[in-house]
Image 1 (cartoon, rainbow, N blue to C red):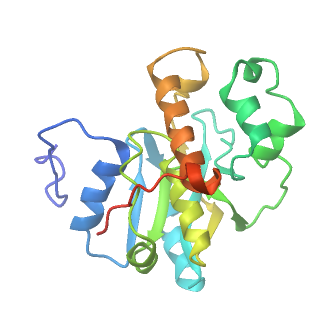
Image 2: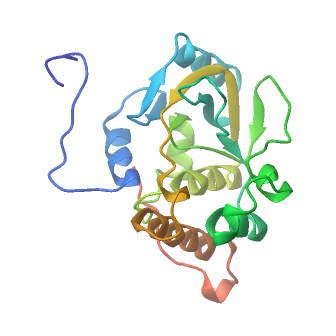
Length: 221
């Protein structure tokens, strides 16, 4: 890898770490005014990163911008979504999801009801591609390392909003995402368990009554 891309800085961990921990390490090492989080199962289409940078340059209140994610066949992957609610939890994380994929609650969560063809302010965007303003990270903090996998992107966008930063979906930037959706294909399994645990952490951190709230701290950069 290092020989093929000599201009890139390759960091090899000596232990298995979660999504947040690994990305926070890279954030600390980065020096630009923007930070790009990009999954390894993605393909950047020409002009995508330039489109994200131009958008962020023109929107100083934007903390995070997400690209339009595409499946390999060219169809759109729902990548901008509304914050979780009890109904969306039922249709996304319980056995009901196998029967309610076409429900209004699922469509609302995935923002399938939005028809805008231009940049759109949203609740959150998938962590597969997040173009993030360093100034916002310095104010809000990096990803919460208490999440090993899943939901850390929702948590970050939620914290950004609470500090006044906006999250945007930018369809001019297109990125192909070879999405596996591992936790969606089985009712019981390691990925499903991790997803449920992460959702429970999110609920305790942001939505639970005060006496049940988590007091865990988010790391600093």
